[in-house]
Length: 254
Ligand SMILES: [Zn+2]
Image (cartoon, rainbow, N blue to C red; front, side):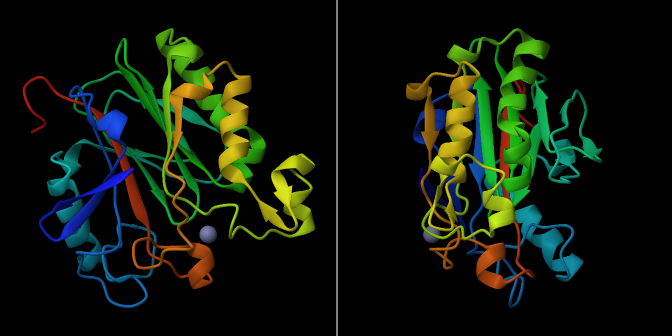
């Protein structure tokens, strides 16, 4: 992943995805927004205790930077579940942690502060998916569910999917208690640290995805507070970053 400057913002991009001119994608970072401590500065979370006016301005800046209209945003309610919805229109989707579409112009989004945003791309159709995988969703199998949903909805073959895992809490920092650790096979917990990246990657490989088509940003949100919001680093009241993925509208994304 590299970071592209756009005005006062820095947008995270996956090099392989960025080359695909039919798609638009990005991952937000902290600099360039208007929110104060602890949401400084580009807090995009709509369910935080931040000033809603600041969040609105931040979201305007982000959507402008990624060159897609916020009116086209698909916003999952995110409840750490495994429900994935195929969407054909923008809007808010309650009780949903993953969204998939083959409709051009729709901006799939996921909000995170440590959880793993998983980008799924079937380049042949094209069809796309974006999934929110925290420890609960991961343990419940949401990444595999994402692959399965793409297969079912669009006939996507798992072995041809391009998959990207965005910045999120890494195995360097993700300390979990025995109750959480017990939900994962021992190989994914080292000491008391959980490796959500490898867990989700392995799960998707078991679902038929090809290891060489899976890219992990390997950027830990807790390690780099200057760039990322981290729920763990803040002890709760953290800002939120946004992952976005869209199929380019042939007539532009207005
Ligand atoms: Zn770390």
